[in-house]
Length: 249
Image 1 (cartoon, helix red, strand yellow):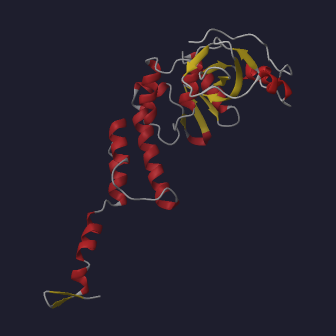
Image 2 (cartoon, rainbow, N blue to C red):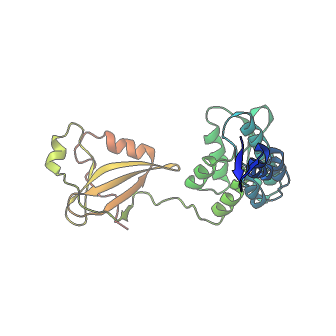
């Protein structure tokens, strides 16, 4: 393809020069991999990962990147004092954690979290570390373990209503709840209304319920064990236990 510049016809090679120059300036795969291999700290490796190398997250190139990243991460973790707590997957599918090893299979997570609990980790902290990307981005666990050891992931208080801001009361009455095929557990609210089990979820080793009131806009979260949650929701009485679990905080 040719174009005219000041009345002269330029050859196609000169027309494509800017695009070719941009390609020459792009980071090559070998440079990207070498950057990760040269990293000596978690911050260095993270900076190398974030380098401007364009790639997809599948296929042969991504497999090469993942292999080098994990090897570099495990090397950096192995030289750090926090490595004792960080799970690692070695040869023959052996999982190592807290100085012990086991073959990966059903229950590996329970095993690893149990070891972490023996080392003083709380339920939430142990679950948070196990659920992290320790097998894909092991270097990121160094900071996470430091935060855990500093007490930044404490277990929640059990059986205590934790107040959260709401927008409006729910339009739902005790009478409607009693007529429902599957009545929701209830609690008396401090405002004089009724709190209803309005859904919940799982939070790093704990279950919780969001209680919503039909008189005030507050949302109260209550943490409990899985067994307690099951017992509460499987009760046939429309009022559950009928007793407040504790004061709102």
